[in-house]
Length: 418
Image (tube, rainbow, N blue to C red):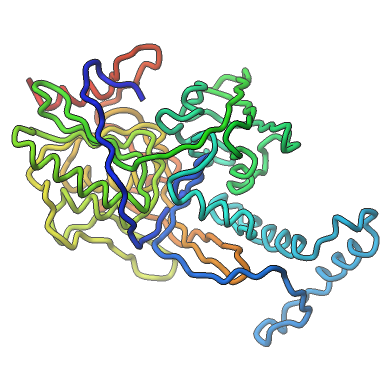
């Protein structure tokens, strides 16, 4: 991300663990994979193998699995390479196929090795190229490259469609039609120093862009702070993700703002933030919105709507706020931006956000595998569902990648006057 000339160096704060767990992805992976995770994690004791038992549970006696076992037996008896017949992998494959039949790219079953990747990447430190990925329709797309990441340095942009992935060392050379997020994560991520080649389509063009990226170890802060504008009187907060360490970093950032008595307002920069923990977005919104007001509404089928409300008195209630968004602002970022727009009439500046309006709930099993299920859609306080359409900015302005200036940030600063 570009910066305005002569800005002071950004302050990066240390992390503090929190309990809650949400969306991408939620959140952030070595290639960024984000789900809308809802808020908790189940402890597991990992087992080493799967036990095959053909007996049906008492409550499933009416289900006919005879055809399933017929195919199983045919494959087990007749497939020519017996070394490839691994019962555990076949079971996981069957479960994964059942879940993927729903046609929802965010509802996925994760075998133990893929689920381990998810848990490792939630730490905020990983090895990869540093992009968040999701789906636009059924096409794998870049949500955003992380600031300073190998992906950003290689010229990968938010909104690029990923149509091919190649890694000679892994013997991977495939298109992305039908790929799910865990598969894409596994293909693109890897050890520092190794390379991956992505084939991209950009901006409606059918001309392929081939990008080779060398993976690195990446440490990503959640929150950075600088002071910009006339007399450095505007606090520019970059929220890069909503992760486990975000609350601790946020608390320290708020203290720095309060300690600077001449601060006239806050620019909340959610550009290229792919989301993360739902509860964290609610907590940050509570810094600005009055107690008792709604931040986000969760809507499930056949159950009453659930409203997440402010339960504390924020420390920045009287501050003027402007929010920056773009096509890389997704999920929890859209929850936060939508809440402040609906409640405070906060101006949104930049480009249309990504448009992810569903919530996933994670569950982990004793054998180390995991399941993420889309359980609900979320709405802004006034009932807007952003899914696949995003939030439209009040002031539309693009950031020119060919200039050193940050046109969107400069436009936001203008709203605070001279």
